[in-house]
Length: 295
Image 1 (tube, one colour):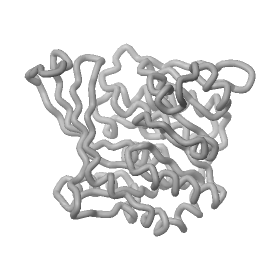
Image 2 (cartoon, rainbow, N blue to C red):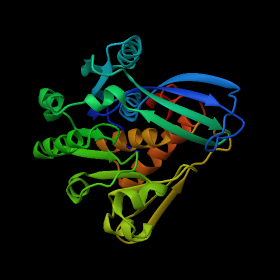
Image 3 (cartoon, rainbow, N blue to C red):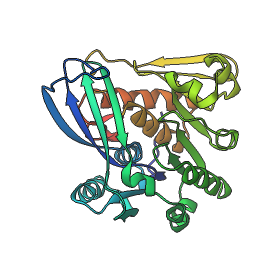
Image 4 (cartoon, one colour):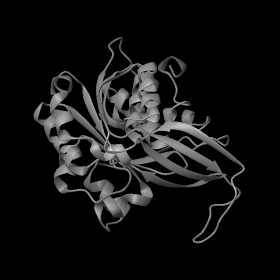
């Protein structure tokens, strides 16, 4: 693995929220009430997770997002600042409250309901305002928890400026060929491939997007097609206690390793390593590792 003394410049465009986690003995079914044995609050949102993840791995990070004009929004902003993320393009709105994800966790299983709230207000104007920072960046990261028109505009703007663009295609949404063709790498969950790409078989999809699509599952395994063969890597830890944020952690590690001009195989290995570390703690952000602890 190569990590130069240079700090990659990364712009993350995406969501930020609070994760309200309820620990239960079972995941409730329809019309069923269960009692939680414990509840916890953690900072989350796929965009904010990736902003913190890449910052902890040594990148200089600008985050573009939106919070409500409320105490939770201020907490999220302070946390991002404390994590050395530039929040100059995190806008506040009085039209919506700050986003919240409601998580029910039972052992290794969980279910999530997301209220995007202020994240729906991330705008094309913010991307235009941040253009000079996109221009000076090495890579732009996007996910699918903000309006699709903003994602499309961000990708086009970044590619027009000659920048690398990474997409974590989650939550799974049908994507246009234009988006899929323009981005430089795509991270997706194996159980969401049919939503994103249609009904083709996984192997066919991987072959179509060779060296570009990286498919993950909850055992912290990643598979991709290198043009000749399927490449498979797995870093499952028996002590895994928290699965939320593993995809964001992988994407953060992969992106930073790519900025340091590592091979795709090494980028995947490093992404898996970062993801395995976050699974050992609680919270999608608090357990993210620092670069000094990995090399």
